[in-house]
Image 1 (cartoon, rainbow, N blue to C red):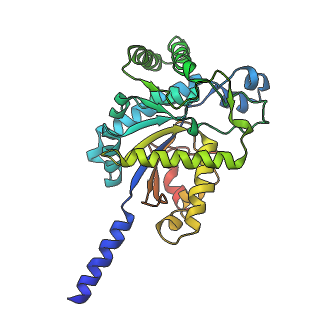
Image 2 (cartoon, rainbow, N blue to C red; image 1 turned 120 degrees about the horizontal axis):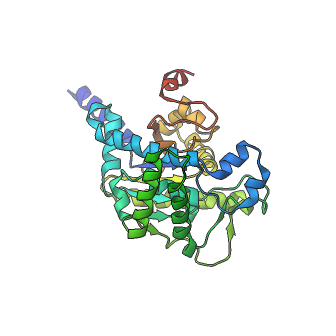
Image 3 (cartoon, one colour; image 1 turned 45 degrees about the vertical axis):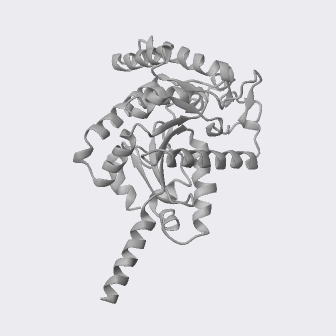
Amino acid sequence: MFQVVILFFCCFLSAASMTPDVTLYLIRHGESRQNVAIRNFDIGAMFREQDHGLSLRGAEQCVHLASRLESMMRNARDREEECKTDAKRLSDPTTRIFSSSLTRAVETSILALTPLPGIRHGVQLMPDARERASCVPGLSYDCVALPRGQVASRALAELENLSAEEELPKHVTHACKEACQALADGSIQLDVSRVPAASSRWISSIEVDSSVDERIERLVRDLREQARSSDSRAAVCVGHSMLFLRLFKRHWAKAAKLHRGASADFFRSPLGRTLQTHALANCAIIAVDLDKDGRVVHARLLCDSGFRDGIIDSAKDVAAWKKS
């Protein structure tokens, strides 16, 4: 009898240790015009404008993600238990939505996350979620953010331009028009209270590593607090590839190496290793379970998401990749 009690207690502790304290859903923005310029080695386009918006393909990616999220939540009963749990969290109206204040991320949050009930409470813009530029300081304008008073108007202007694009499929331009209307009539509101109000530009490309790390820590702390305050114990954040890569490699993986257990095990897994070396693809979404100490205990890609360098291009590659 005593052995049975001990076994039950150990199983209880094991299950409790695997239960996440919070779950963060991290989403990389849709393809931007800067992404296109870099891919095509178009130096002029790279430096022609400040804070590039979505490309035409980026708009399509956002609308596609919205469709996948809607399908995931609608058909949750027919899916695996883990997917059901994610669908339940994302369907919870208390699950708040956060975004980098850079235009491409703001557009993505408005276009891609319309199926989430939490969007009715608005999108909180978080400057700490902005990208760190990879170009020479002072020469790249892709991460030169707009001041508080210009963020919403710039996003609206970008979406209006997309809604008039004849090269886009009709369902995409229709989604862009609906997004414009939602912004204009207040159905979707952008909370810009954290965005600097000064008219001067703030440039992330001149940040030293310690400064980037400090704001990543603030960002994660904020997201965890927001998730804890919701009934779903979850939060959604739209951000950027290099920021998320640094988050996984320099923060979560580094913390995991200092402790034995689920977090260390995860970062030895195929997904855990890949997250330290490869950036998420545009409009990829990953669910990250954190324990009460903020360590990653589990993560999973949703909606057939993949990585920028082609590690996973589609759902059919997942099985082979997991065996690597």
